[in-house]
Each structure stands twice: as structure tokens, then as C-alpha cells.
Length: 405
Image (cartoon, rainbow, N blue to C red; front, side, top):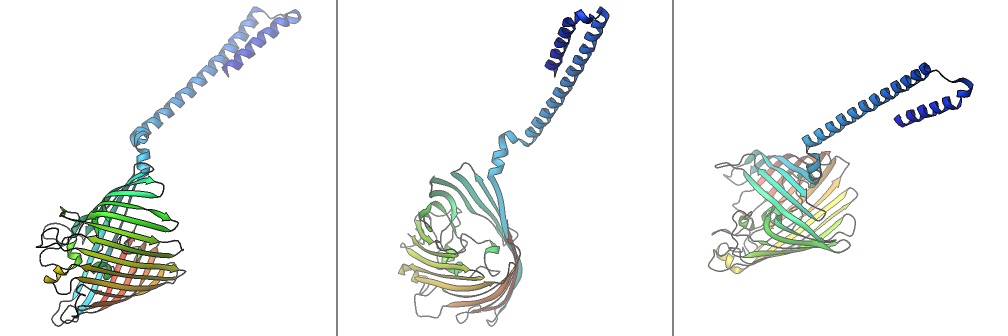
């Protein structure tokens, strides 16, 4: 604008000079014209200065806001850090059919979990799972505070990765995916509790990747289970990576097939070098074999799993038949609509299956899930057990609410 005004002034003066022959202005007229042009120039300068001041003020506000939010240094980090979680409240009303046995009638906020993950780069990330069980933890309390996962994962090639830290063992259906909105029933199934000791995590290193389209593998070398003196059930051996004994290690391999939409087939094998972690008179090795199928076609779903431990005979000095511990279940389900789903499940398991004595447990579940949204759910199921003579035998119902985000 200023340059244009100067040009106009110059052209005006030239025009006046070239037309002087016709009518030459007086000195007073020339002075008047110059004063008018100068006034216009002063106004333009003032306008530009005001605009510059406003721009500086705007820049200052932007810089101040950026400083307050630390956008320049943390915006990208904030975008790469994710917080999630899940939780579930249970009501159990079980009658004990054993003469003189105690009923189970309780309400429990079973799990409150927070998940934290961060992406350091396109190939390096961190993931963790922090859990409070049973509402209150501390000396004399029934709850526990647990770190179920805390590992760094590195994609060392396009289809293969390595993770190291504390992670969930790649075995079974629910051990790695156990948010309450992802399965039927208030309680997790008994086979993936008594035989596969879910939730089951260890510390170590694991490799994962894709061998072909829809065919993936996992291999992990990690801390092992440790059965204390007088214990024989697999679940009692979980150390939870809490000053865990590491006299010997364990190794887990899995193959998973998912090339057909809606179908998952998987098999896992685990080798435990010594169930006692050097505390026994002799080493007790063990091998776990697990296979499962998950199928969803339209509204119909099906889950089936079989798992078996083969343990060195030395464990039979603790409990007869404990050298073989096995179980299986089958669970058909029907999704009626976006909100309602119904299921039934039959479970069998035996932690002393290595002899002919009656030590087999079975359990029926029948119930429904009602999803308020995709990841919030109300649950109801009936349950009934058949157990060996003289053992606690429960029948009753469960109510629950769960969520994940």
C-alpha cells in the first residue's frame, strides 16, 4: 500500500509538470497536495504498525500457549502414549452340596486394571498391565497388587518382532486376551484356571512373527513355575516374577492359524526344566501340550480347548497320579443381536489323572451376556459341579459387570 501511494504521488507530480503549459499550479496548491499525500502516507504507516502489533500479540499468545502445554517438546510423545484398562465386579451365590461344607456367597471387585503403552519409534514400543485384585491389598488383606505385563517390543524386521520383560505366556485362549467383554460367563472357565494357570505371566524374552499369510509363531524363553514342598497342582507354582527362583527355565512355542475368516486354530508346547527350581531332592521336569479352536460364523460361535501336563514320576511322592494333569472344555454360543448373547459350557479337569482313582471334576455353565456397548457388558450364568467324593461341590449362579477401554 505504501509503495502504491508513493507511485501515485510521483505520477501526480509528473502529470502536473507535463500539464504546466496548460495550467501551472501555484506554490500554495502544490504544498496543499503534498500535505494531503503526506497525511495519507502517515495513515497507511499507522495502519501497518497496528497490524504488526496485533500479529506480534497473536504470535506471543501462540508461543505462551505452546509453552504452557509444552507442545514443542511433548506433543508427539503425548500422541504416542496410550492409557487403557478393564475391570469386573462379581456376585457369586453358590450352595455347597458337601455335607457340612461352606457355601460361597460373596461380592468382589475381582479386578481393576490399568494399561499403559508408549511408542518410542515406528519399531520400538512399551506395554504394561498394572492390576489390583479383590479391591484392597496390604498386610492381612485378601487383595493383591500385581504387575502382569511390562515389556519392550522391537520389530527387527517387517514381519518379526522381539519382546523382553514381563509378558503373558502364549498358551490357551484367554491367557493373553481376558478382558471381561471378550468372553462369556462371569468367571473364567475352570480348565484355563486349574490346568493352564491363567492369568499366567513370566519374565524373559520372546520372538513372534508371521511365517506365511495367516500362519504365525511364538517362541519364548522365560522363568519357570516353582512348586513348594507338598504342592502338586500346577497353579500353585506361579511365581509372578516376584523375586522368582531362576535355578531353571521354561520354554514355550506356539503355532497359530488364522487364514480363514472367523477361525483360529492354535497349538502350544511348553517345557519346564524343573518344577521345584532346585528345592527338591531331584529335578522334576514337565511338558505341557495345549490345542484350541475358536470359530465365529455369523451369530454362531464355538470355543474348544484341550490341555495336558506330563510330569516326571517323582511328583507322585507328593500326590498319587499328579504326573498327569489334564482338562478340556467346549463352549457353543449364539449372538442374538448386537446386545444379547447366550452360551453354554462344559468343563472337565483332573489334577491327578495319572492313576485310576476318581479325581475328575466337571462343571456346567449356562448363561447370557448383555452388552451395553461394544466393551461394556452385564453377565449372568448358572453353574453346577460334579466332584470326587468328599470334595466341595458347588451349584448356584453368578452375576457380573465388566468393561474395557
